[in-house]
Structures are given as structure tokens and as C-alpha cells.
Image (tube, rainbow, N blue to C red; front, side, top):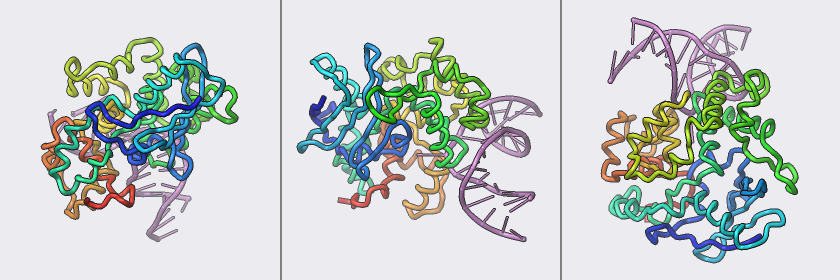
Length: 306
DNA sequence: CGTCCAGGTCTAC
DNA sequence: GGTAGACCTGGACGC
């Protein structure tokens, strides 16, 4: 099944496909992929009715994304489901016009107004939480190794697509057992965190999807952060990171990668976290996103200060 | 071969 | 509420 999706935000703002799928590195982790030299996004999805597919999202006609889903999928209901999934993955229901309004007056971030800054979500928030844990206190190569092991060992195959697997369900991650995390996935001390989180989700003790679907008016960022910090292995860095992946952009992701990046790109000596927070204060609920765009502005080579 | 540390967090003061 | 020390792992270093 193939269909096109208009690339517009909820506020009518532009969405730059390329900048969106390169918003952060997490999206290239297994089982997702950014093939074709980074021009498309491939992602296995579990669908309703026990079906699964691998979708590929690529640039379509100007202003559109082209979505292709593997397998014998037919009918309006499936297309509606896929549309909803892709809208969530690309966060098309988010309104970034306020972010762009502030950025337009910021010479160092004016480039984002062309449609940058939208965070790509994984198939489920659970997947993004697990992957975030796998980024803590280790190198990126270790993150890749651990997520590869989780998918290869516990992910269900996608029928009809050779080699494709879904990200493991919470249930599968509970079932794996302590020894598997230690000896096979080699997740180190993170294994206990991953199992505990998977158990909470599987038992329904925490409903990540409900957290994501609750609007900020009902669940402000402060309260959301508090809930996330209750998860074992989730501290200030991980909470901010997960919140970004939920479209909650108030918290800057401060870690050993972004702090030096900020120092280098701003051409100033390393500054305190408080100074960073001050710099992006004008962005309000988008302060964390502004910081993220700032420290990743050299990821794509054509982001001159236009 | 030993030490250090990477996209931190937890626990114990 | 703020701050040392421990913590799995494995790649990068210095010796």
C-alpha cells in the first residue's frame, strides 16, 4: 500500500522532511533504519488485528511524504490506521508555529523556520524509553549493540519481510529474564532497569501511551517529568530526552554530548547549565527544542544562517 | 595490560 | 538539597 501525506504542522507551518528524519540519532537504531543515504525512514510497525508491516517514508511531491507499507494491506481502514501512525511518528499534529515565530528573531536559529525541529517518534513510546536508557553512561556504539541485541533476540519477525523484526514488546522483555540481559544482550546494570520498566508497562502499572496522549493542560511538563523520573534508570537527562520524543520540549537535554557541543558551536567557554537555560528562555515551552536545534545545527551541512 | 570514560543514575551521607 | 562513589560494558588510550 502506498499513499501520500501532506507535510504541514497543526499550525500550518512547513515540515522539512529531511531535517525531520535527521532530528536526532535515535531513529536510526534497530529496528528502524534511515537508508538511501538518509533520504528515507524505514520502520516496522505492529498493526491492529495482529498484523505487522514495514513502512517506508520518503519525500513525495513537494509538500508531501510518500508512505509505502509492505504486505498485502488493503482498504480505507488500514490506510487510516497507517496515516494516524505516520502522523504520530512525524509529530504532524504538533503546532510548531510559536517556536518558529521566536526563532525568526534569533539570528543563530533562524534556519529552523524552514521546517526543522520536529522529533521523529519511534513506533511506540516504550521503544523510545528503552532506547533512551540504552544511551545512558555508555558510548553510542554500545547503544547500537544493546538495541540490536534486544531486537534480534526478542523482536517478533515481520511476516513477508526478510530479516525485519519489530521492537520487542514489554511482555517479551519481561520474559527474557535476568541472565539473558546479562549474558546475551550484555546490558550491564541497565538490565534491571529495562526489566523493571518492561514489567511495569506489561502489568499496566504505568501507561506510557496515556502519558503521551494527555495534553499539557492536564499534565504540565513538571508533572510529566516527575512521572518519568519515577521510572528506574530515568534521571534528569533521560526524562528530558524522553519528553523531547513525546513532543514536550521545555527541558534541554544536558549531557556529555550536548554540553561540549554548545560550548564549541557558541564559540564560548563551557557555560553552566543555568546559563544555557537562560539563553533559550525566550523559547518558553520550546526552550529544550531550541537548545537541541542549536547543538545539532552542524548535522546537516546546508543550514547556513539564511 | 591498566586506566579512563562515554549522550547518567542511584544510594548514602 | 547537594555531592562523592559505585556501577556493567567495551573501545580508546597511555605505558
